Length: 437
Image 1 (cartoon, rainbow, N blue to C red):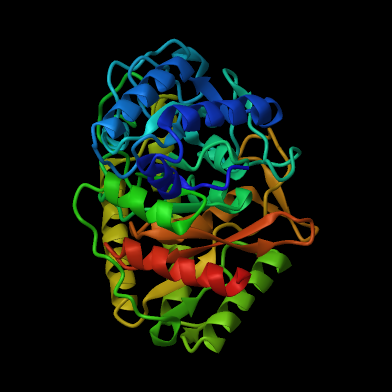
Image 2: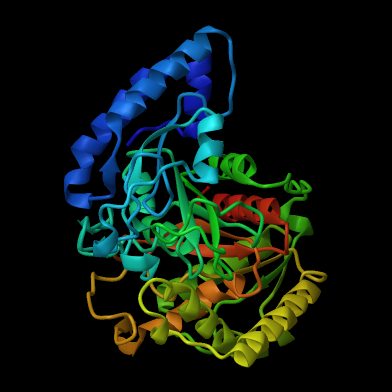
């Protein structure tokens, strides 16, 4: 695995210790050496990447500077990159070629990033796996028999295996946070509306962004995550205020009334709480909002189904207009409830998912079962954890905090108030350091 992150790579290039072309070639070599079994980088654009790297080196020679100048990276297949296919894993869209870059891709390129290609997704971005009839299956670098998560599964696998230092994903049902947790990397689901989704369209369309849907970065460290977030954001986001753990007020949500949680995940959450308390933080484990989580999840599900049903037949998710407005009203109430909570707390820390990376399973998600400490449970119930932040549009950072007895990564999510994205990352950084330092 390369030891350099995105910021470190850009700095080394700027100092003349390496070149953009050398870093590009090294990343290509890592992909070619490592990706045979993993199958993460499924659309490759190496020749244009080499040309872009040469242009970056010329810019460095002219004395130009940019935050990611010369840094090689990949982006999720769902983002348009001019001249490359965008299929979302749908066989019928195999041949769709994007004409222009997504806004997020434009911003990364403007910051100097070199786009090597695109990473794998499930069909319609609708699973916590990454398998489709065009590109096949992506495997978890920690255990090839297990899922890397989804829908940004190829993104997290490319990072975790060391192929690239930075990635771009999207999240409506945990699609950044779950792969980050399963693969042991960092991921950030931004505040709803903070980043421009243009160019992250269903293939061939240019319609309205789905409710709750966001795009965001994945990285191997929080510094790269925070930089990428700022480069992608539509407006400057408030920076964290610099307080230490002794000043934090944390609500620990170690369980959900709807979704079972494995012992390893629960133990990790409790260890996080204990470490924060030892550092002086105020940590609560009960709050009136917990009684409302099932009702919120019950409204989140039809929202999600409607959003994910685009392009696969409207009869699959017809919602009467009065019911749709009722869902919006319930969401507005949830937003107000969470806003009131964040008057008393700096963050909520909760599981990303109730288990670590699970074995590949091609059973339809609506019929799939999941084993939680030897007990069979409904797979869809686990969406309750991603829903915590997705339904009210809150920022949430997936943070690696350890491993289970099988050596699989464990991640938690740090959820902060609206527009407090950097607070979520900062608290996540401290939690990670407390757990791994």
